Amino acid sequence: MSAPVKELSIPSLWKGRGSSHGCVSFKLFANARAWDRHLLRKTKPGGELFGLATPSNVDSAASAEDRYDYIVCTFKCLPDVVTTPKLLGPLLARSRNFVLIQNGIGIELDLQAAVPSGIVMSGCAWIDATVIDHGRTLKHGPIEKLVVGVHPPLGAPSGTPHSTEAHTALTTFVDLLKAGGGTPEQVVDIQAARWKKIIWNAGFSTFATLANATLPDICHEPARSYTMPIVRGFMEEVVSVARGLGLDESVLPVASIDEAIDLTLSEYGVTGPAYKASMLVDFLAERPMEIEVIIGGILRYAVAKQVPAPRFAIPAFIQRPMFHLNFAFRLSTAYALLKVHQTRFIQKSKSRA
Image (cartoon, rainbow, N blue to C red; front, side, top):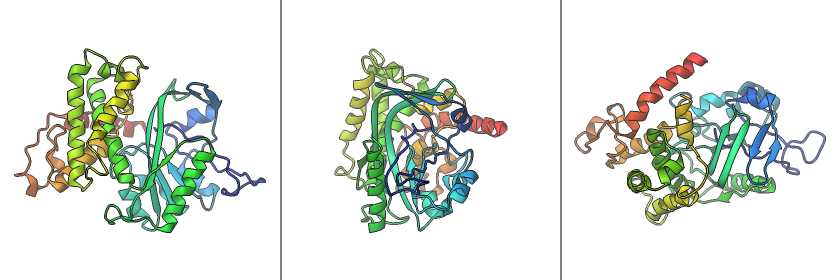
């Protein structure tokens, strides 16, 4: 799960109860019971202690209010387990504005199809936070950045100007976060921003999970000399696929690879906490991982645009016959290896339900 956003108290913007500074808080938590029973301790420099009241399910949230200004989704996008529209259920009719603070590429598509009149925004969370102590403690590292933007309507070409309504919804949401003490970065092209983030996820998260290694394990010498070339290779393939989609050097510079690597090495190359990528945390807990929206999403675009991506390997079940002669894919790579575990984790999660 992504790190929680602070509760906001904003005058005249939310439906208030007995105050012009009314505040509506809504989140979906996989560990809602732990949050209800315990305050969540957020640990960072100048740490604080706070708690949030959370609805136990979407039905109770939908019945609490007729309309919400925003539905903010901070759960992990796991379409091979449940799609976002199916998870939101009755909440789809409670707002026109949806914000997806999630990892992955193409995470907006099924929601846009389910709510054609809706405005779908998303945020890329650059944050090294891990929930520990059975969900009661959020261990927060030094990196914290949220990049937010609006997705073009479904089927619209990249670069399509935002409608006035969409622009207003985005700027209002960003202003809410700023008024609550956040430091969001508003961008015009959220797709380019998401590809910049997926460079990091596909490189470091994938390698860390396959290696069962923390970021310092990967970034310290002497390991760095043989881990970084593989991580960089994954990242280069991400950029190649993005190029096939029309994201050129002006919106997704190849220097984004160096920026992602340099950022990580600056925090974990010499010192830094034993941070585990969220995909690795899920792997160790034997929970479904975000591989479909991270690696799988990249590979599907690679197939659609006929961009070779051999390091990730595109398994047969998502290939198309017309492309068989254009690609030489191997199954002994990251996606195939993680898919074996993903299948087992999904089956295990269903047995727990």
